[in-house]
Length: 342
Image 1 (cartoon, helix red, strand yellow):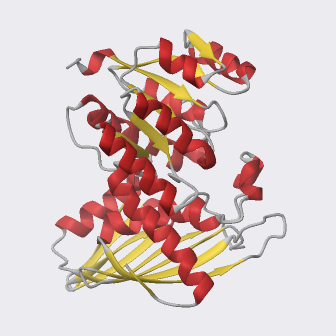
Image 2 (cartoon, rainbow, N blue to C red):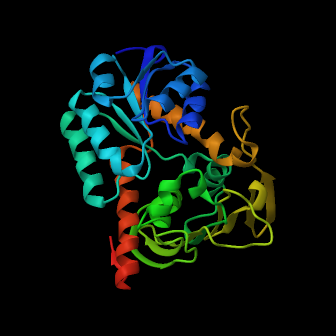
Image 3 (cartoon, helix red, strand yellow):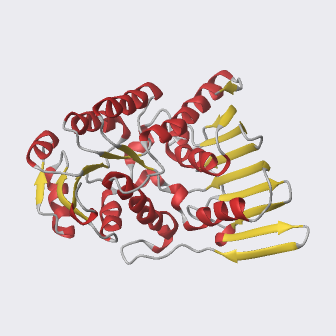
């Protein structure tokens, strides 16, 4: 097995997120991007010059045939993920793929199964759970002696126009649950475990968008907690807090809250202790996006452990399939008005 210091990878897709993904990889030792692919070759060439990547391809098959790779990082739109995962799996190249995994549950299941049958490690780049304040919230939940959670609220409300930088989002028939819901439902799983039942209601507020832009999901978790998730892009609030997820959990012997401005507060009958858990800033990150962009670094570090065979990655394809099932159960519930058993 190669040492971590020799891991070579290629990026497939050089759109909006690829610049941040490459910058985050450069924060880590033992990994090197050796090639880029994009269907519009000029975009890949510009990014290669910026990051000093030695080779560029306008054909993904050619890249995979010519390059000796330890993994590929797929950063394309979800409708193309399956095709590129298939290409890599055929050549026994481990895969890291952006979320959402696929535009349907059936396609996501096929991708996971194909990689499993080929013996190819498959990971999903799910960075939201790696945000500094969310990791601190999880640590408090697990170690503060609060007992089992019985009720929780996970909220992401914003007026961020994410479709301005990613125009394809405007055309999605299914928008907020696949885009932001993939993150928030994954965070709910990360914090509170497996869901047993799910009920969802959606709204369509912004006429610029084809798909729904607000959703409310209530889940009963296997460990007993009731978890309410709210997420949307049409909430006009007194103060915009870009990209912040707010979380409150009530437990047997107290509560823990992730509030505005990264404040994590733990309360018991003895009182409250609180601290601010701000994310780090990297020179390549836009300051208003620090919370999200900084989370790419620990996410990539964790995926590198899995890709190198030196440790366990949290968000394998098999694990993320559980989040994908929640996403499409939410659409089923919203369409039918029923509670979905999972």
